[in-house]
Length: 368
Image 1 (tube, rainbow, N blue to C red):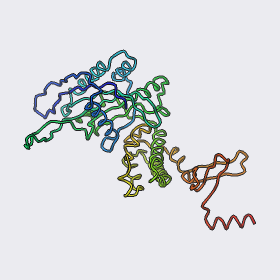
Image 2: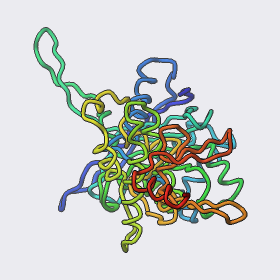
Image 3: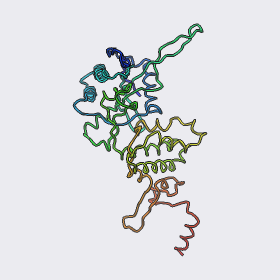
Image 4: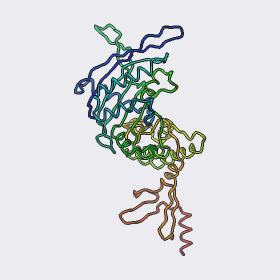
């Protein structure tokens, strides 16, 4: 991560109970911070670290480009260099204030704006925008061995946040791919459950974030994440095939329900059951955090696609002449010698191993 610009504004908004007089909603503008200072970098790194973790799972989607939504135009103007980062953050705060004024139970907090370049295993130099609400919390420090109350910020949980991949967003605008079926995700957001009356639900509404993803791509992304998660660690890689089959089977089952919806939390539960207890503490990253971030960006909830699930469960191949056909469970085929059906690309052959005694007997009888 290469940090470019950071600015923090504070929104003052208190809950208003029935019969109480509403206090005006105001905010204090901050100034650009020195990104070379360790506390500034530590703050943004802390936010990025918890983004997509359990308790901070993001949803994937797109901007609402309706006439009533202005935030996406602020993003475009910033990308084109028509407005500065400071101006972008001020316009966004003005939009947020308009959204929150009429909400009695909404509260304010610190609004952290940051721009940076991010890299992941499958992407390079992505320009990113991150906006997060950070709340105050009370802490205790000791002065001369006497406890005193101090105010700190709560970085264990993001009360709401949005992250925009400007690189992917530019590609989307160039292609005008309205169906969102093949492009890489450009927007993710963390929104508390409920409606606009939530404490910070107004934030996502002000930014015009909509939870729209293509079900086929969402299913492919989650299954790719499961496969790569096990492949990336040799201690759990032997369980990769079983994990993909179990998750794909569950997604196929859910695709036949009326809602066709499943959650990343549930996938995490399935994955966790396959990992030996003695190995869990040695893993660098949990599955939820792994899958909810680049390059997979699996949403907190997603629609299940039966076609994508079946592709992971079954495979049917045949030669051009139609002399032979192979139907098999997808997880049985691999490139390693330990695979039940080994694909040897170099020598242009498929090798079927681990034949049962009954199958060997049948083959011997048929060939004799």
